[in-house]
Length: 173
Image (cartoon, rainbow, N blue to C red; front, side, top):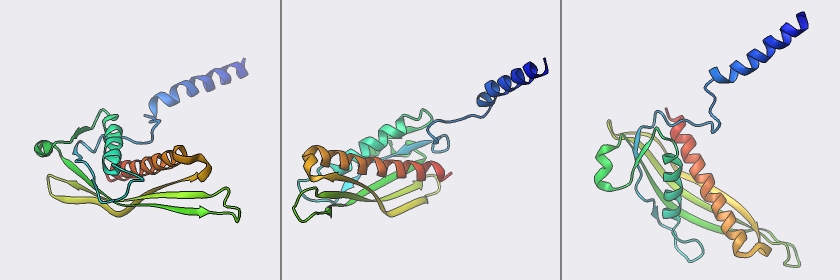
C-alpha cells in the first residue's frame, strides 16, 4: 500500500511540475522588447556570389520577431515613431575561402562568412542597448555539393546571425 501511494505521489508531482514552471521551448521570450522598428539592413557587399544579403537577413529576422506575439515589428520609416526600440544593421562583409584542399584537388571544403554591424537602441531615451560591429555567421560546404552546398552554407550564416541578434536582443533586458 505504501509503495502505491509513493508512486501515485510521484506521478502527481511529475504531472504538476511542468505546468507551474512557465517552460518556454524556444528558450527566448520577447516580452520586454515591445514594439521594434527594423529597417532593411544596408548591404555593403559586392559581387555576384551572394546577393541581397541585407534583404535576406532582414526578412528572416523580422519573421523571427513576428513569431513572438508580444512583439510588433515596424518596417516603414514613417512608422518608426510607433516603436519603442530600433534595430539597425549593415552587412559589411561576405567572404568565401578555401578551408581544406587535398593535393588531388578533390574534397575541397569552403567556408562562407557573413559579417554585420548591428545597433539596438531604446528610442524613448535614445540609449544604445547593445551594439556589435563584428557580428558574424559562418557555414561550410564541400565543392562537390556545388551551388546547393553553397546555398545551404549561406543559409547557415544567415540563421546564425539572426539567432545571435535574437539572443542579444532578448537577453538585453
